[in-house]
View 1: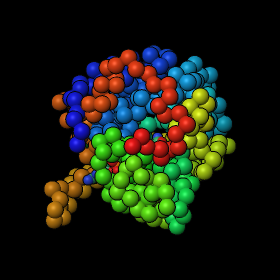
View 2: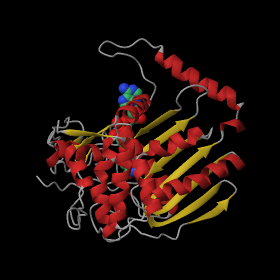
View 3: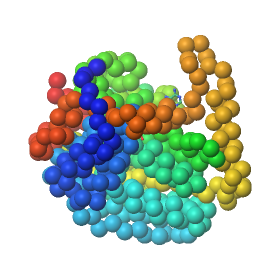
View 4: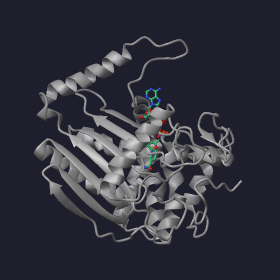
Length: 355
Ligand code: NAI
């Protein structure tokens, strides 16, 4: 493993915010992105934390992110709406859209809010923690650029299209589960590349469609559970792309191509008020019971205990928030420097590697 630097959440926040502002992002937007990325790194989701800043900064500097987006919410029914993001920075746009979605769900029991045109919106867990903290249930799905082979294919079509879920509990942490529908998120390949670490041969294939352990040789990723993960990716793409009239499937823009153009991505929140179905306290008690009962399942040989889905990320969050967050030394050095790259990522294919 490469050398790491332990950084306090506040220092990391400031460094990220400064760098994004230096690239041209508005202070309020940079602040929200910093909060989001520090959350991801704190959860141990390093693939969606500070590692992304270098790339975001180049896209911002080239104005492939709208600096002053004209965002607005278009209510299309009592429980539905579209938040127009004008290709603002994804984490800020999605966070704004979520406010409308939660308000609508409180008012009407359910809300389906599609976000039309934003840049990369990060980790779904960030939004789902907020939803659960507001006594709501949430589902969060978004598009990402085509890099996963369809089951049986050798060229990519869908993105790593993530699904996030959150539900409140009466005691302790909410249940927040969040995953890419590929075996690994693309960021995990980036993470392995930055550490020069081999990857398991179940994650990705090379350009010939052959499984590879070298992160620098990756030509496409593999869906989780074969045709089932492939089907889930399609569902995410229909809900967050096709349904919003946005480019879909293989037409979704590439992260590292045309850094001077907006990405036109889609993201959808489905928010449910559980109190419309049963007594809220009873619901939350049953979520707590779910967690307790899962904890009480005896551990299989080789395992220490059963965690409820998403718990390990939350435990990591609590530890790193207290003890400091391990950040790759190279990323830290970039953050404390004055550098904003202008020609590091542009024009690369999604799978390009420096090595
Ligand atoms: P992962 O494989 O690290 O974890 C998936 C889920 O499993 C997490 O909720 C984690 O807490 C849980 N988990 C892991 N080990 C566990 C255990 N032993 N017991 C119980 N639960 C356990 O996550 P993945 O699939 O690599 O995704 C990483 C992040 O990438 C996610 O936050 C996702 O939202 C984000 N993502 C974002 C995209 C975007 O375009 N915005 C695209 C793809 C992924």
